Image (cartoon, rainbow, N blue to C red; front, side, top):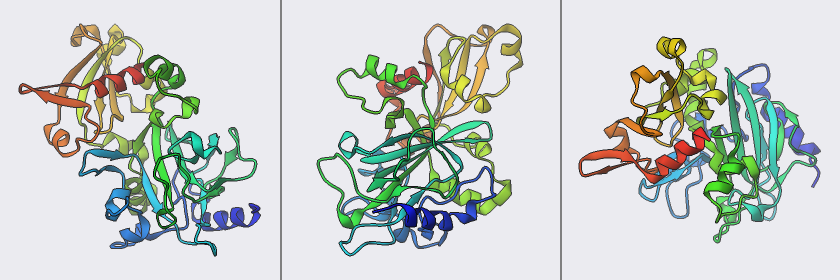
Length: 336
C-alpha cells in the first residue's frame, strides 16, 4: 500500500502541533488521553489485564515489572481487522534509526527520532509498527505530525501480539550512552546487539502521558527541563572521576557548584529517578566528597524505593541500603 494517503492523514491530524516549536503532539489520532475517564479507550493492557498495564512505570506483574512507554490503542482497521492508523512524529526532529526487520527485536519494526528541546537531546521511539514509511531512513528531518509508519503488532516474542491488542508502543527518553555498542560488547557478550547505539536499553524513559498531560495543562508555560528536575529521586549516588559521560551529554541537567568550578571536578553527585534516569547532576570537588570508591550510594528515598520497586537499582540488606548489580551496571553505562 502506498504512503501518500496516510502521510496526508498524519499531517492533518498533527496540524495542531505546527508552530508550537518545542512541544509534543500525540503520536496517533487517538486523543482519548485528554478525556477523563476514557483511559481504556487510549491504552491497551497486557493479555487479560486492565488498561493500566499499558501505561508507563511499575505497572506489570503486580508492580514488579517495568513498562518503558505507552501502549496506545488503534482507532481504524481494514476489512481483515488489521490496524491502519498512521503513526507520526511527536515533535520536529531527525530520524536516527529505522528497523524494518521485525524478527530482530521484541519492538518489532520500530523508529527512533531525535528532538532538540531546551538544551536536551530527547528521543522518541515508535514500536510494533506494521510497516515503516517508504524511504524513511537515518538522517531524515521530520516535522511534528509527519508520518513515520503504520500502527501494527510486529514483534519477535514467542507470543505474538493479537489483532485485538494491536497498538503503538511509544517512548520518550534520554540516551544513556553514546558508546552503547562498545559497552554492550564488553558487558553483555552473550547477547546479540543488532541495533548498535539504538538498542532499547540505551534509552532511559520519561512518562509520555505525564508530559503530554502537563503540557496540555500548562500550555506555553510547560518546560520539559523543569519537569525533569522535579522528578522524585529514588536515590543519590556519587560517581568518581573528573569526567562523567551523562553530564557531558546532558549539560542542561547539571547544577552549578562553585567549589568544583574553583578546585576542579573530582566526581559527580547524581540523583536517579526510580528507573535510573539521572534527573539532577552536581559536580563535586575532592575536598567535599569521599571518592574512595567508583560508585557510592549516598542516600535512598525509602518511600520511592518501596513503592516503585520494579527496576531494583537499590537493595536493603541487614538494615542497610546498597546499590544492586543492576544499579552498578546502570552507572557503569552512564559513565562509560
